[in-house]
Length: 295
Image 1 (tube, rainbow, N blue to C red):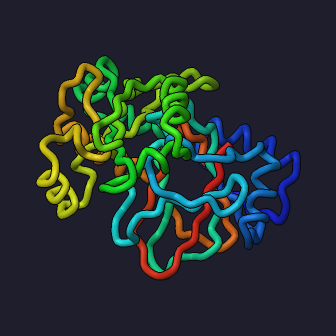
Image 2: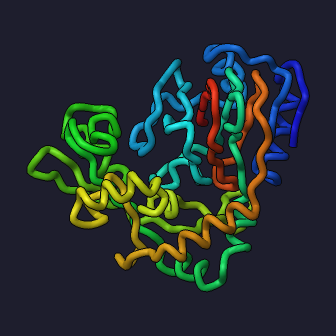
């Protein structure tokens, strides 16, 4: 659903709330957002933006209070469709994306209805994820190495503070001799939406799977490490069994079949209901500045 508007009013916010529960995505066009501060002011009308990205596995930079860059990943690669922080114990209800600079080509933020993806999956694949769940694994270095450090991930240099967060998030973990950190997070792959009562696809199994990496990077990392559990992040079924590449390929195929996208225009805001809709990023050329807020 697209609204061409000039200001955010209580009536608009009420209408957006109602539509998001049905469609999962709303595009606001015409607000003329031109700065992080203006974006924050607009998002705050819907709810206070989260101040941090603690525990997040993707690189992003805070540019203002509650405002972050979208995932910092090479422009030539696609970011697969996923639900934000679905690997965590808690996650944002809604995501707000804002375009400050349009890319020259490409660079759309595609979306996909998680209910449609779940329904479109091969029944055997769907049953495996439903009954087994998944385990997200991280191998975070202590200051030097591939992937993110535990210091950047948990926004602290204090091991005790990191452990406090890990306990609260329900993760098991152990420290390595070189000041690295291994974590393990068992999670459901399918959840029930609290408002609609419908089952939704809500996980990032395919994004954490080694086959999601660009081939050259994947081969280099697998040559460097003895097994997949040594990678910066990896995933298994909930019983510890490997997830075959055919299962994650089935996820990607179903997601692509149900993907929708649009070209960004400067000043646009897209609101995503995080449990109902997945989002990603298409490759692009030229400058591109998309900011993100979460509530």
